[in-house]
Image (cartoon, rainbow, N blue to C red; front, side, top):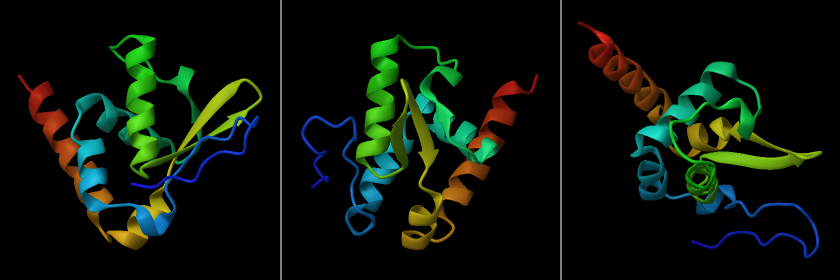
Length: 119
């Protein structure tokens, strides 16, 4: 996958353009429980959230890896605001490319979480 390169010296992160987001990349990115959890939180908040907002059960370096996988596969957009790296779901891009996919996956994830939480 080709990603737009950041301007040298800038803090911009590379993101795939909408037309280069691939279904198999999105499914791969969402196949990990930690990454799916990140996306569920972003979808629930409907706002950009800093990396530090997420209380993930992994180390900081592993967390960074999960955010990178989501970004490189077009699921989230990451931008710096001061020293914070903000994360936003690319819902418009995903809904435009794969109508209904994100909502179906989020609904399934919620149902699965409910089954695992049940006695």
